[in-house]
Length: 248
Ligand code: ADE
Image 1 (cartoon, rainbow, N blue to C red):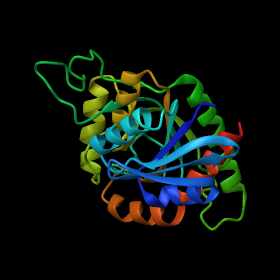
Image 2: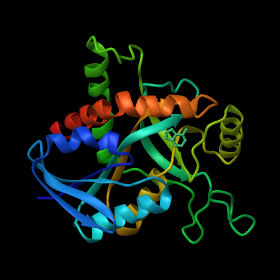
Image 3: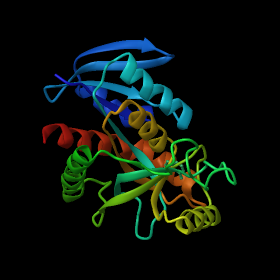
Image 4: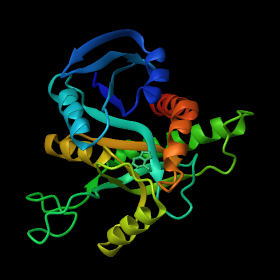
C-alpha cells in the first residue's frame, strides 16, 4: 500500500498526530525524527520539515528517497495576506511561489532559474480531498462550544507564497502583495516551506498538497499572534484536518 507523508513545520502541529499513530516506530535520519505507523488504517510517515525552504526540501527528499512515500501532505500555519483571509481561516494551496526568488535581470522576478516557471501546482486530487477535509474540520471545530471557535471561519483556495522570512509588518505585507500582484500572483497566505517542497515533489514526480490555518495576518501583531495560535490551536486544527482527510 502507498505511504502518505504528513509534514508539519512545528512540534506543536505534530503532537496530536503522533498520539493517534498505531504501532509507532521512530527513526532518526538526517538529524530528523520520522514516525512511521498506521493512522486511520493507512500507512503514514510523520515528519517535521523544520523551518525554511532548505530544511523543508531536505525533509521532503529524505521522505522520498529513504522512506519511499508516494504522496506528501503539509499541514501547518501561515500568515494571512489576502483580503478577508482571517485568523482561524484555512487556506488550501492551489499553487506556490517563492517570494524571495530573484535572479533578475537574468530571469524574470520569481522565476526559478532553469525551470522556466515561477509557480508550482499543488496536486489536483489531493487538493480536492484537502478542501473537503478542511470544510468538514472547520464545521467540526466551530460548531462546538470550543473556547477557540472561530464562528465565521472560511476555507480559501489559492496561491501560497513561501520564503525564508517571517513576515511581520503591515508595510512589508503591502510591498510583498503589490510586487507579487504586479507579476500576476495575488497571494492568499505566506509561510516558509510549501514552495520548496512543491519544487522537490515536482522534480520527483510526486503529488503534493498543503493546508494551512491562518495564525496571524503577517502584520505588526504577527509575532504576538503567531506563538499564541501555535500553542493553543494549531495542534487541534492539524489533527482534525488530517483525521478528516484520511477518513475520506
Ligand atoms: N507562518 C505563520 N505566520 C507566518 C508569517 N507571518 N510569515 C511567515 N511564515 C508564517
